[in-house]
Amino acid sequence: MELLFFLKNILHYLKPFWKKFLLALFFASLTSTLTGFSTWAIKPIFNYVFIEKHYEYFKWIPFFIILIFTLMGCFSLLQAYLMKDVSTGMVNLIRLDLFKKCLSIPVEHLTKYGEGQTISRVINDTSQIEPILGDNLQTFFKETLTVFALLGVAFYQKWDLTLVALLTIPIIVFGAKALGIKTRKARKLAQSATGELTQKMNEITKGIKEIKISGSYDKLSDLFLKELNKFYRWSLKITKYREGSKSLVDIMTGFGGALVIGYGGFLIIKGSLSPGAFLSILASILLIFNPLRKLARSYTGLKEIQGAWIRIQEIFELPEEKGGTLKAFAPSQGFLFKDVSFRYSPQLPLALEKINLFIPTNKITALVGQSGSGKTTLVSLLPRFYDPQEGDIYLDSTPLKDFDISSLRSLFGMVLQEPFLFNLSIWDNLIMVKPSATKEEVIEACKLAMIHDFIEKLPQGYETILGKNGLSLSGGEKQRLALARVFLKKPPIIILDEATSQLDSITEFAIHQALENLKDKHTIIIIAHRLSTVKKADKIVVLDKGKIVAEGTHDELLEKSPLYQELYKTFHRE
Ligand SMILES: Nc1ncnc2c1ncn2[C@@H]1O[C@H](COP(=O)(O)OP(=O)(O)OP(=O)(O)O)[C@@H](O)[C@H]1O
Image 1: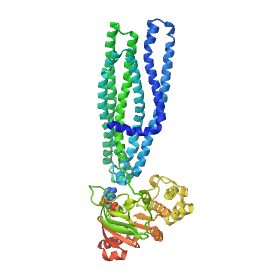
Image 2: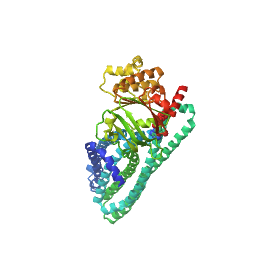
Image 3: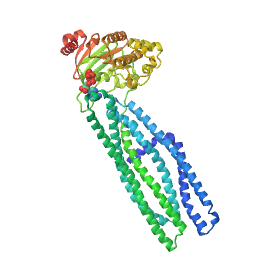
Image 4: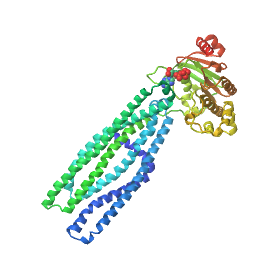
């Protein structure tokens, strides 16, 4: 049942390639027919040429053999090429679907497995199944046809002798089944170890400076070695089971051959079987075991794919983001949080508790509080990166859940402390948020973000390709580019989460001046530790351990909020 479900899932990806697949099957059937024909022909040729002494035809036998084998070779090549085309195409479709799925599942689920494990599922697990899928599809269809063709010949010659030879088949079937189950488990665990290796490498490349300074080489190498050893052990087991199924068939070939020779010899002596028929059956039976060996291998291969597929399926089964049908609009009043509580997972404490808050439109609202107080979490609920477990958030008077999710997100522009930049030109990174932007608009946005002069000085200017993840830029330059994106898109709602933390005070002041000018038409939410940047905000919200403890203007809070006073004092001391 489980296998059927899996096959149904995999074969769904075969649909676009069915013509090539059928053509491949056609060539496979030609190869199998020729194999059957060549064994069937032994009897008449042997009896006619050697027993009945028509030696004048003897000279044609080598040509006949060369012709048959050349045709078989050509058909086999065509069939293998087409099958490879089909299997690679299928895996590409699976990868594309996985990629799209990753983009459409909620952030919390995507981060559940860790970056490395997720990447590994999309790239490594699929690449694991590709060669086996190609190999298996062709083996399965071609060898099944060959087995039937050879069985047909053998039964036609002498059915009872053929049945005797096939006494070994149940042993092969049960053996292959048991080994297949073990292979599936081993493949799943080997893939999990590969995922852990990718995860570790991912962490190492991200934290390379800290690792070098902390001198934690040995500890990390040990962890890496542990995963390598896991992979090594499971890979060896897979080979053991895979080769085991082939060896089982080899052993059974001996038994099958012995049975045919024993019983067949007895029939010849008794005079009820001609030597030509005996040879033909013996060739068929011995030839059957070769495709049977491949089929047994193909079965364990199928189980191997199933092991890798279980991990892929886990991603496919993750729920997708659900939105409503309403098209979102720029708020005319603002956002309202009503009794909102949120935790990242059931085991973790509340990150936000009973939040009641109004964020007015076309004003600057600032969120302040100590590290871990819930500021980033609070703003992450607005574009619905996460949904609260309790309470509701409203855009004007409509719950956020009623809006179509992508139209809701299109209202926002966000700049984070570590902005994300693509490995593309500066120009492409900028116009990503507004593909129709003119050169003048882009330059104006960059001037507002105080990055235009810097870009102009680069040898390739706006066409400069950024290093992977924008590594060639300093933290402050990345932040200014990300701010330029926001100035270019001019979205109705702008969220700046520590977006100017890496800028010098003069640049930061100039950017906040530019933001002030946007204030009348845009709702701006700022998270900042430097209180100088939020002093002018229309409303400042003070958070502490996931709760709102005070709200007001800078002056009001200085009077009434001890925590704000404390934060302000600390800031001035710094
Ligand atoms: N993805 C996550 N999974 C689990 N817990 C998280 C996650 N992100 C944040 N938290 C936890 O939620 C709480 C609030 O974190 P949040 O990032 O919102 O605080 P913050 O006020 O923005 O902090 P900072 O000023 O340091 O950025 C913290 O206890 C934090 O450990």
